[in-house]
Length: 559
Image 1 (cartoon, rainbow, N blue to C red):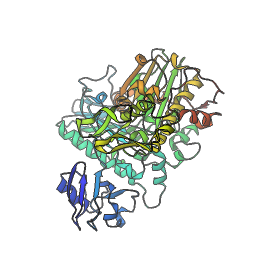
Image 2 (cartoon, one colour):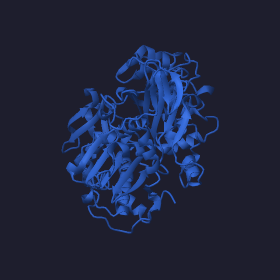
Image 3 (tube, rainbow, N blue to C red):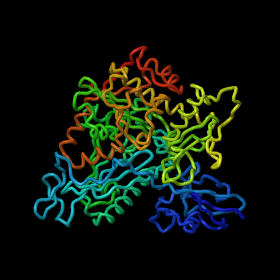
Image 4 (cartoon, rainbow, N blue to C red):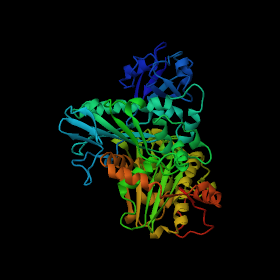
């Protein structure tokens, strides 16, 4: 008889039991709201080992692919293969930047207010006062979702929650999710997954804060173009096809809407809140440069003091925004999931047990390392992978091209032998390509604006991955521009910070709607020497301090 495992816990595998039954035995929390009948589609789990031991997918699982199953539907068919699983709703490390705040911003002017015993949205009375008025800021990231519950009477943050985006069954990046949305018979599944997760998070935050869900009168959403539009129930097929624009951007450019922001009733989207609650989708810049980039720009007040500043929000889809000489340029970089745990044999996201920093010895093994939560090492997350690449380069164990030296005759390296964690040439290749996307975005945006790295007064790094980077190591391998280290500022989850700012200020919403009309968007692929830059970016060496080559053609967002 074999075993079923989650993390370090194992139990005997029982023929006839569902994965949900085994999750109960292992003490693993798997979300569900349909009493395990396969109707809510919330109990998605990833089967990392032993798919062959389970029954075939049922009709209710037809929307899934790859290694994903519904825990209530997947039954054990045979007990001669070990099974390992993990629910999608794992809890990542929440960034310090999303801390509780004890007061509101200086320009506090929320759209929802209290006048006597009335609750008003703008000038319209929407409810009687029920003891509290709250709002919800949402950062709907491709990988992670962060929620922040805010008191709209004081501006005080009441709670923050973060969890893995449950849409992973549709793919690890936006292009895969766009393709998934086009499949017959699965319409709405990605939106339903996001809505269910946000609803659970809202309920939990409200309960912990001593509030109730009907106290939530407004929700403000940041996210890339695809994530935002999926939540609002819009088709995202146009974002996946040339010229890669949201339906809202097409409508704006055609003069059929004043901006790309969205407003909807929470009930129409299925989001649980007060029955009169509104949902505000932050406007997009252009193409894949979405509402999350706008929120980040608000958080860091990019270029507000006349300085030359660049924001890099790193993720599966990295956004780069540069402010210089009173103008802004922006581009998106499809970096993919390599630094988020995908395509690397022992890569993983920032959960307990992930190696987040590592020092490499002369033979490639770790002389020291640190894991999240001080748990036994089970894999390496993004910041640890950057350390590893830089360390292998310093020790002469990897060439600039990401290959092991011929004289070493290595096929892979035992990085942490006692935990069975290795690193291969293929792993390095996948990381190099993800790194090259970030490299291209920064270099082309700077070159278009006529700015060299030494002229950057501030380089803001946003997002979970960037927050824990060793900046020196990142510069050494060319992941970020060679800006003086003292000018690099890590700003944590700037997207949810910006969403909170717009939740608490109608004025900032008008600012955001106007800002997006003024940014010059650069389509990286239209740059004449894009391929050459990408190939150069795949090498594990610093970005050049001085740029040369043809100037790319910047395409203004707006006419």
